Length: 244
Image (cartoon, rainbow, N blue to C red; front, top):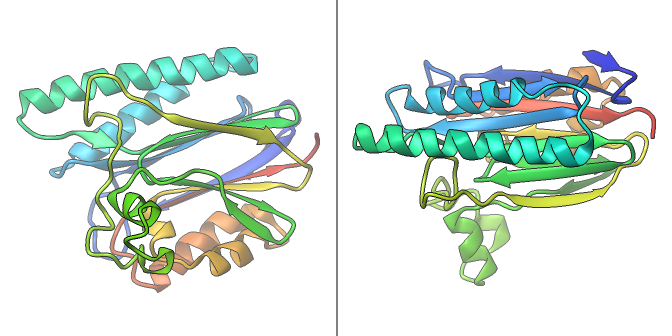
């Protein structure tokens, strides 16, 4: 687990292809020194998803350390927007989609900001209470919001994998949702791909995220998904706030 006094936090990450995949099309960013973390879940087939999520990872890893919150937020938006445009052009050239979900966490002082597009998720564990910070951009979430599908039936819905927003998909401009809030000492954040969130129940996610040593949480969460025969790639990034 990497620890930094500058960001007043520590983090760890784990990614696995899953039980039925040869390639891992998930990518992640784990930069406690910059107060920046992300998970991207690529889509498009024939390893195109790996390219898409990798471009997002590389773009975010190229952001300099030490930026104030406002500038970091702007850099994230700008660099993701450039990747979006590049993927749209590449998809048009190959007559197919090259896209990826994205969920980003930025920590500065006693505040955090979460940005996302797609169904990769951000959770926050405060005490023993697990809260889903992000809200899926998915067909099933729209059906739940419309009262046509019960929340408890969403994960098993036959169209559960249909997302309605992604980097490299849709119109020219990409809109990422954002939520910001205060951070408390001991808060733990989980960024994950849907290979985890669609496989492991929230109650088990909360229990594994609450283990005494947060450094073990990503390995335990991924192992839990694999034990349930996760058919998709599985990625978990865990961030713990140490001082505020």
